[in-house]
View 1: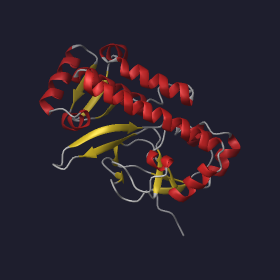
View 2: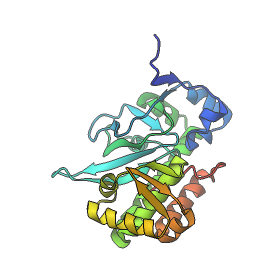
View 3: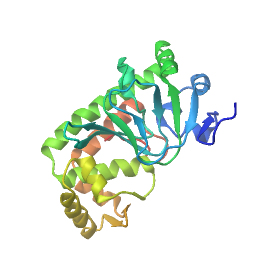
View 4: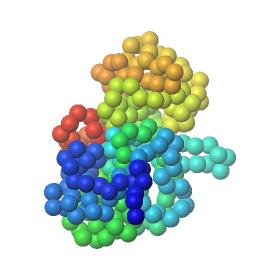
Length: 256
């Protein structure tokens, strides 16, 4: 059977290993074995990876891209609870044995393809209690820490600080100074009204830390953006680096 262009077997070149930090951290022998259970899959913007309540069939290991995990209320309102990039995996509830997805996961900003593993293969690897299990467990700890920090951040910090934090984590994951972003989408992700985002972005532009034109944002002063953010960005990044190890290349892994 011939595979489509969107799904290709995963080979073990150094470039492909570096796409996802969790996979790249595996010893060579473990990665060689795990790679036989993975396929490449191109990601598209707004593509739904997991739908709330549906059975978990696959786990995604993103490259340089951003995936969002959201919660949908009864009235249809949506709020982001976490984001995932090349530092980890989409489908963390599988680590705890959940048979169905908790929350909806979709592609926020597509970049590099994701490595995809079936839930059956994922569970087999976890049952080995080897390096894969160790890396995934540590990532899960960092993910829970990120959720706890996010709850505190949303309750205590201003919309501007939270916006700066979101932009910083996205900048880390994409690895580019410019990426697609609308005020409407950012408002949904931050759980605020669109006019609030418009005011915040306008102030950041006046401060010279970002520019925003035609649905794209550009980071023009990284240090200034970090100064305007709250301590949550630094705390979460430190937790990921402590548990997963400091990435070898620039800005490839921070949780939001």
